[in-house]
Image (cartoon, rainbow, N blue to C red; front, side):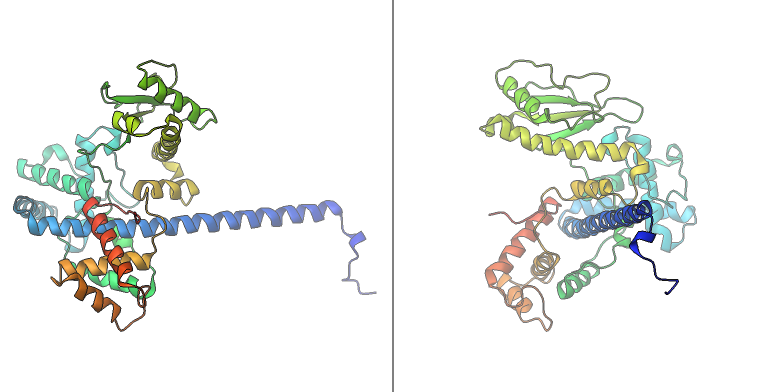
Length: 391
């Protein structure tokens, strides 16, 4: 008998069960890691398109708004002079300028809504914001305005040829190109002039509540991020909405020291929605995303390759962008570039794309599909957001 041959009876059953358990855990971990990786890939796609829509909005503002171009040019002169005094090499200009904007932001904006932490490896150049000259401080303030508006520190002008090539590359193969350069420019995006149906204010890491004063035309809910997510939340939000309509107060979501998030629901949204529960379901989804984002912001240890991070990035960059392929977005931006940068009519731009020498996702499509891609691209650029098709 072969000594290496083992009968089932010769193997300890506990060892078999242990091996199966280890194999099962390994398979589960692999599946989990695959899902996380897929989410992060989608998140990178979102960042890529967010940048390209915002970059075009920035280019158009520079070319069409005289005051903006003047402020940008003057601020660039002072920023460049400051970098020269700091002996910053040209290749490091954008990174160091971004660090300056972050430092200025941290010095003046204490509200956590504006908080932004540098990524690993940044802040190699330390700035004493209080020691900047008046002109240098004005320049830093202007570039912070640029970063908050467009979501990227455009400390150097972006030119059409720099971004058009990337889009045609995506149109050819449907996959995004390396985005490390984009990530280096990335910043928070905040439009303080708009009011969505639901918005949020937060408590900072020291427990200070940066909540707005209450208005009679809005419903305010105060959330404890650590306990939100119970099965009763939708019912409680629905009851709060109904009570607001009747001008009654409830004990749900009242302000306390543990309130970490202030949820502000516009009165227009409440009046527009026929059923309180329908609005409550929408609000619950928005609050769940806000709680997740807030929790990751509060605990930086979570900022690794985790599903929580992937969900957070997706929420921050694309609340409504699913179901639009990279190829279709590329075609839309390609059309937009031909029309706005190339100064040709839409019909001619469509013909050029249909007659392209390489295959792409719209090569045999109806012209209406390309027009739809263009309309979406134009809307995304105008709103500086990654959106989906609407009927």
